[in-house]
Image 1 (cartoon, rainbow, N blue to C red):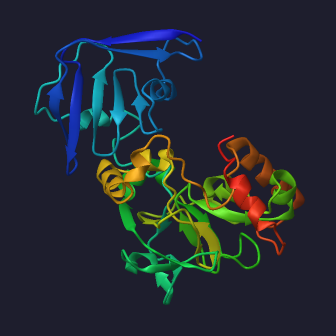
Image 2: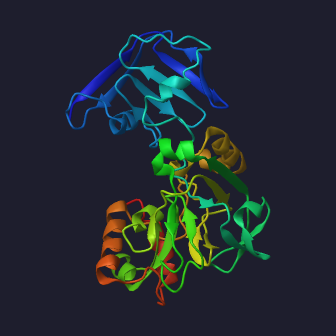
Image 3: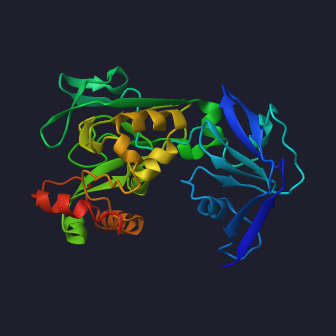
Length: 333
């Protein structure tokens, strides 16, 4: 472990914003800016991960040899690490983003999303997600109907998917989860969680039902990152609280308003959600997940056991439902 102190002279830190596809400087620093980064691997360089940790980012911040970026898909701070670049108000800095591994586009990798064409169970039956509007009733696994409070969408073309392949969706082919589910191929964002119900989960967590991100399921047959599609449109459905909903017959989740998900949204979307749920501004607010969400390491072990034992992710099994709800609050540990 070593601490690296970065000092940015006046004019080498710019506040930037996006208009259409163009990023431009709206303000520059007039005093030196100092950021201390933990060079965790002691290599003498600031990596994207180390920079992200230093500025308390949510995974959307990136490092390079000449520039560092702290922000989201529509605004942020751009730092010149060599201390020689001078930013000018009004300057088009769009070209600078091409040199970073993050292209400054809205990063939906950490957001819970279904894709255009997905059939979701509503109060009037199965409905394509793009046809669902605010106020529409969504059927939940609890047997209730919950109204949609907010809907977001993000269209990514081929160029964007080539620049940021981590945004490509995960394809869950028909029947890959078990019990013939999903009914049709289901495309979801990598971090969109699917319900796993199995005896293995119950032995590991004390409850049979847990939520696992789709990207963690890609080591299983019939589930993979789709590298052939040329565009994808992601949709986010927000209900009054985190719920288990039905997509192509399989049980999945509504948008979870945890810190990571909110950070990954565009600033406009985040502000809109906070206006609907102002309690989310309270840093002590801890939204409760609909089912237990294991840690990343435990998720990996669960899927490895399913793969080794060739067990489906969905099984007919009785579960102590209240135990699952109680254990859901332990997901951060």
